Length: 199
Image (cartoon, rainbow, N blue to C red):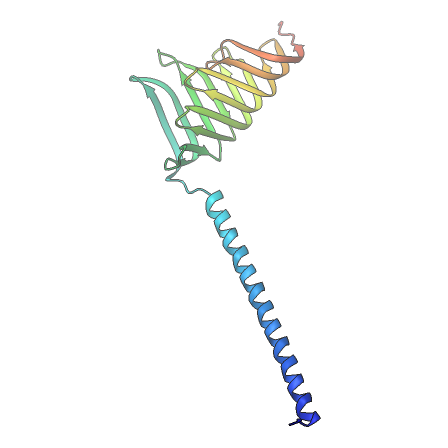
């Protein structure tokens, strides 16, 4: 039996309207799921990228000794200790000062920097930003990055360095020394300025 044209027209309109509603609903669900997926990924990135320290300390001082002999003293405004990590490390985001001692408890060198990180297992320091090292003779090293391998007893840098001595200033790239900075050398000397110290 044939239905009147108006009924068929209403039926077609409702079917089209229903299809459009389903399409809008499915589109909304897809957008919602995509949005949630993005937020979950951002949360995962945040939790993986931003490690939480096991300990935080402010105005921190530490004496490091080896076989009852004091090796160095560390002073920092802020310490973050990530001791629960697979490769534990300590971070000094507001800078550090390290005073190195000899067997007679005399200061043989002082290191300061605006940032430092210490890898506990490797006994390796990385100092960055306004790094200054002063040795017992008063010679000073200035650079933007310095590595100190405590176990090997050496410090080095691959960055631009400046050595300031009583009678000269030496500029260059790359530096290597013992940790007291008593025997040092610049790998690529770029220039030497001699100073007149005569009275």
